[in-house]
Length: 127
Image (cartoon, rainbow, N blue to C red; front, side):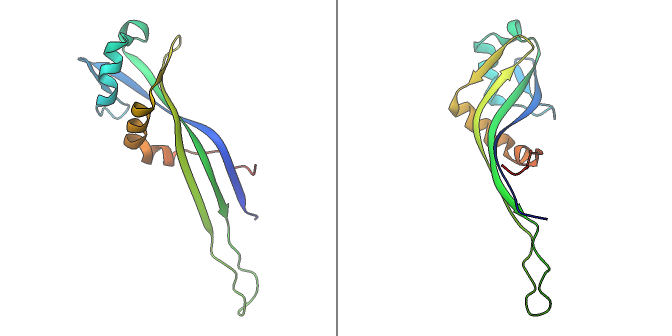
């Protein structure tokens, strides 16, 4: 197997909903970063009670499966990889509306969901 590399824009999304003026995610955890936005933009009238939070991010990295070639004198090298992800933009979406969130909110949301973004599958076909 050969070394694989990737550098592409990916998207991660979850369902969010509003209940009692507070926004919750698909794990029923509050997302206070969205409370004021949902209310200020009157999204309940435009999106309804349920929407989708999307975070577009750049995924960049490489994966090397290692080598066992060479016998006892040259044992090769172990598998190695590197995967970096950088937030590009975040938005709230419905079937009829997309609201792009400002960079400060995007960064807060990325911080909240960074581990889940890193868990997302990416297309790692050689570029």
